[in-house]
Image (spheres, rainbow, N blue to C red):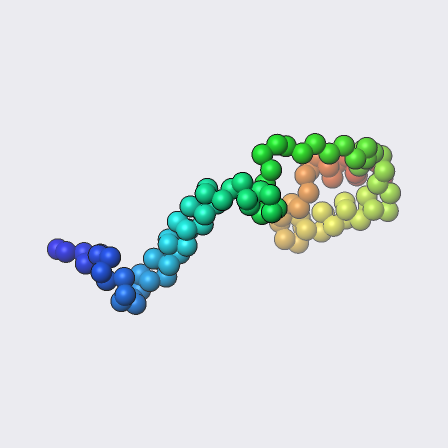
Length: 101
């Protein structure tokens, strides 16, 4: 059985047109970014090749969090776990915050 998937049938709009448009767009973007990578980096539309190191001299989270904020985070975590059955924070973080209270 013939599939009738030919380039001459690209003018016909059918159920496969969105897939063909997305595939053509993806190929265009990949080729465009590979060819113009240097210019895109200069203009700020691409990530730099070297890793940026940032040292903000911030204190440890557990030493600078206020007790009221720690209570709020712990209560919110308990509420989400009991009512919705999900965890939004790391259990170790909640345990440390709960122990500091």
